[in-house]
Image (cartoon, rainbow, N blue to C red):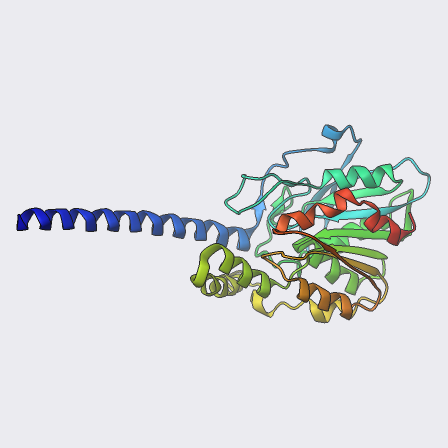
Length: 313
């Protein structure tokens, strides 16, 4: 009988150890994938094009100031002279937005062609780009959540200002998450940007901490701190030292409107409100009732006037 109990106990312990090993292996595998995405981005084929919405678009190839090749689409309006809007995606999306289930992240569909089509119908030119390390643009690791990506925004805005039919005095940027960060950095450095709508910008350190805790529990903040150090291996900055708040204080030329979900688990409404108060030409903060990160991203598609109003449309 005692031998039977021992065999049963050994079997239970083996099963428990096997289950724990499988769980740990799956956890570490997911951590590895998401760490890779945070460092390297997600270069991949864009799954949807303007033609799917019967929009005429031309392919655009740009080069940022540090030599990185950036690709995008330009969707022109029919007006002789009109304002233009640059749409900048978040991490780790591409110029078309995000399709749920393609990556390991907890995500949802985000369609950036929908606001592009709405803006074009409202009489504005639209440029959508893949930031470096994303979509079909060139790899230039590491991802810096807006800091180096702002160079791509500056190159795109400079290109827009040179296009026939674009009113160079009415160029705006609609940015999401990392793209919002990049737009704010760019607006602090350029007088060619006249309006910004920043949809759920977030300080990298805060994002890593909150994302890590939500996805991995108590061990999440530790994993986030480790991930935040890794860009240094590629000659990049420690993510925890990248600060957005000092930059928005330097935005003197552009009017800036913020959009933020009230219960965003990966960002913080209070932190975005602080950015808004620090922005000299703030056009206010729009608070969206949202129980997840993605609900706030839907606002511009439903309200294309959010950027058009800032450009006089």
